[in-house]
Structures are given as C-alpha cells and as structure tokens.
Length: 340
Image (cartoon, rainbow, N blue to C red; front, side, top):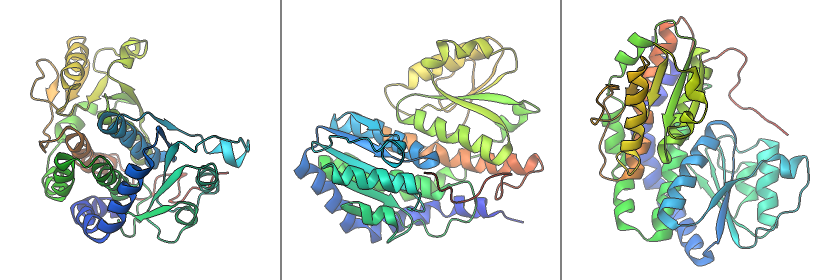
C-alpha cells in the first residue's frame, strides 16, 4: 500500500509546475518589490523544514544578490518582545500552516519594524499571510504525511523564483522554469545501495556545503522524523573541526554535493572518510573512494542542489518502511506544531 508520504513525493513535479503557473504574478511582484526596496540585508523567520528552506534561500540570496541573510529566532518577538531595527531590510517568513504563534509574531514584528516582508505559506489567508506585505501561496496542496516534502520543495522554488525576478537574472529564471521536468527525473533515481550499508547503524552524518548544506539539514531531520535514526548535518568543512572524531570504521556518511564551486571540497572529505573505513556515499562522479549516488544535472548550481532532496525523500520513505515504521505518522509528532 502506497504511503501518503510517497504519494506526496510523487506530486512534487506537478505542484512545482502549478506554483510557477498560478502564482507567477505574485512571485514577480514580490521580486520587483525587493528590487525597489534594495535591502541592505535580509532576515528569515521559520522553524523545522521551513527553516531548512530558509537556509537554502540564505545561501541562494547571498550568492546571487550579494546581500547577507540572517535567521531570526521567533522568540525575539513572542517571548522577549525585543525591538528590532529592520527599516533597511527585507524579511522572508516561511510556514506551511501559517499559524504558529511565534512565527506569526515575528513576521508581524518585522513588518512593524519597517522590513519589506514576504510570507511563503501553504495556507492562503493564514495569519502569517496577513502579517506580511507579500503573501505567497506555494500551491503545494494538502500535505497529509507529518514529514513535510512537497511544501519544503515548493517553498524553495518560490524563493528562487522571487530571487530571479529581484536580480533580473535570465539564467536563474530559466533554471527555475525547468525545475518541474528535472524533478520528474529526480524522483526516479534509486539510492537503495545506501540502505544496504546503513544496516543496523544507529547514527550517521549528512554533509554538504552552501545550498547543499540546507539539503543535508533537511535530510538529517527526515532520518529522525521518519526512521527514528540519529542523524546530524554538518558542513563538509565544519565536520573536520571535531565531529570527525566520531567517524570510525563502517560509520555511515551521506555527502550531498551539487555541481557548484564546493563540489570538489565535499568529494575530498567524503573520499577521506571512506579511506578511514567509513561507509561514505556522495552525489558526484568525482569520487575515488566514496561510493557514488545518482543525481540530476540541471545546468544551474542552485537548482542542482535542490534536486538532490527528491531521490533522498524517496530513499528515506522506503527506508522507514523497511524498518517496520510508518513514515506517515512518526511517533510523538504531529503535522502542525504551534510554539510560542
């Protein structure tokens, strides 16, 4: 029997296409608003998978627009009531449900503090949409499985589309438009060999750099959510500053490399860990010692990184079931978490 999670993974190409078609006007207007505002910096407001989408957009904006991006702790508004000076900034708030009180409070505070605010939400008319200047419906449709998949991907697609309009970058605009087709190919990729080496492992590292670090963060969360497996995401550079001490023979490592300037450094770390006896896998053809996993080439470094999450989602859903678990309903978790 097909799980809701698997069904929602398979919907990703369709919902991405729907977003780009149905929200095209809103995406363009948000991008033009950023161009007019010309913010000195940006801030993001999110938790969980949405925060990993925000991390992806942080790297994308810094690489593409040259503006620094910082993540705001929602408790700054909801608990500490801290006044912020954001008149020179823009803010992106991301929430599937759009109603977590602390996220909404921080979005409201950012708007009141003078930021140009954008909400990315899967719930039109939600409180976070009302709190921001530019409410964007990510058009992912109902997401029943507790673990977010299509809403995570569409949040990033929306952010990249806005970024392309903001910077008026034809290459990125074209790459975003081509994403539904690349997603359709990516969900067919087979990462089953990774499962063969995971065996009875109780912990693993997921590595990346730049935008792929955001994908690694999301992958580590999904291991925890769906499979009850301890997983930690690290920069492929940061892992060498201490955490590598835990990597012994047969320790599993998943290294996510995109076709960008960081690919060689990620591969070098994966190869080095494999040489120590780790079960190291990497999404690159450059690997010498680490085992290679298939990936999709999109022709743009940002969209290359994003497509890595699709074969992973398919893998982790299957891995969860193989462990006798239900990926649709992880123990002690619920779909909407409302924090204050």
